[in-house]
Amino acid sequence: MSIAVIGPSSFVTCFELVGATGYEEVDEQKVASSLDKLVNQGGYKLIIIPERFAETTRIIREDVMK
Image 1 (cartoon, helix red, strand yellow):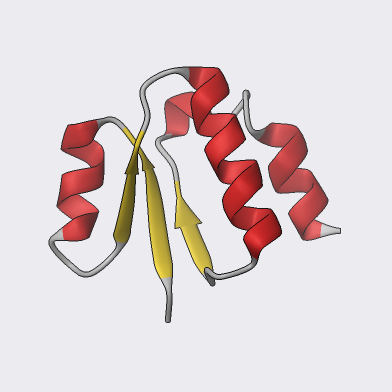
Image 2 (image 1 turned 180 degrees about the vertical axis):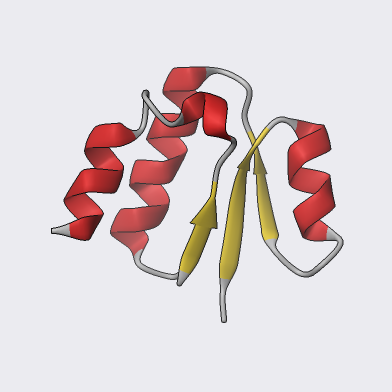
């Protein structure tokens, strides 16, 4: 299963250690942009983000669940 993780370095590194592909971003808008790009590319079954970015990415996540 392809797994991606988006967030700050310390968050991303933990998941990279177990095989996830990491995308380091700390800015809310950049996290949302990266998430949108990864969702549209369709290469991942699971994309992990820190909870603090939940509100910023809500619209993107809701679109995926439709």
